[in-house]
Amino acid sequence: MAKNRKIIRSSVMGFCMGVKAVMGKVDNQVEFNKNTNLYTYGPLIHNPQVIDKLRLQGVEPIESPLEADGGTVIIRAHGIHPVERRNFIDKGYEIIEGTCPRVLKSQKTVCEYSQNGWFIVIVGDKGHGEVKAIVGCAEKYAVILGESEAEELFLPEKTLVIAQTTLSQEEYDSICQILLRKNPSIKIIKSICPATRQRQDSLKKLTTEVDAVIVVGGKNSANTKRLHLSALKAGIPTWHVEDVDDLPVEIYDFEIIGITAGASTPDWMIDKIEAELMKKEK
Image (tube, rainbow, N blue to C red; front, side, top):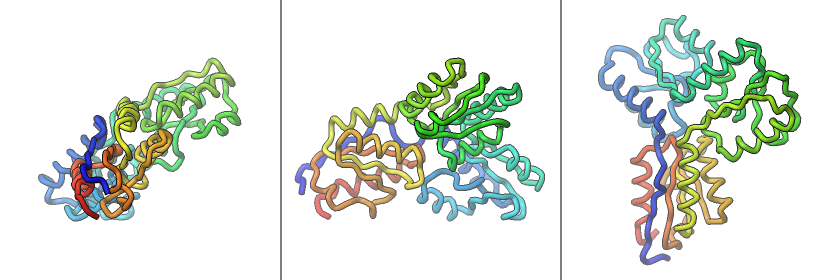
């Protein structure tokens, strides 16, 4: 067991700009909107502890306007399919816009190019809320993630390529290189959030300074999973945890431990994990 344990935090981690903004809007609604039912469109962020905390405040996630009898619905940072947005409005819900500005920009870009006859290639996870929201703005499109899918894809002359904002730049670059070989005239949009790259770069530096890494965040968080994979690729012992109960007993054998966290991880959860790691015995 390490006697002089040291914790080093990644210089960039935790809530991103979009998550901070939508969490602020929820807090305002909880504080000032006392006379209406309050919902979020799906889980507000990919963090079960935050969702549980919101439920205690009377904020419930719903996926359809038919799941409730009206009220106020806050759109999560991932955005919403345009048809679903219209369904909520038609059912009389008040809409609070919480979509990340970068996601809104991607939706607007896809809508404009799609209306002008362009084929849209969306690089990202088909099941991710942001990708579903962007797909809703496209007429002719394909969603791909791996290099093999890129190799098999047919690309019309007018093809626009855009990425899920939380995709790693390395993944996007490698896929775009394949698409460019197939069709050098494609238009590639720089849609990845700078905070995503900053987290990855900060983690790379962290792995050179520590003996092991703990990645804090929801198990269903795409960007947290990518942080975990990046640390593993660096060849350092790494664990992805949601809460203190997930911490492995082996971690207490390391003297210098690094912590990073996904874009949906609140500061109080990071503090909780660090406090647990600093305990001398387990």
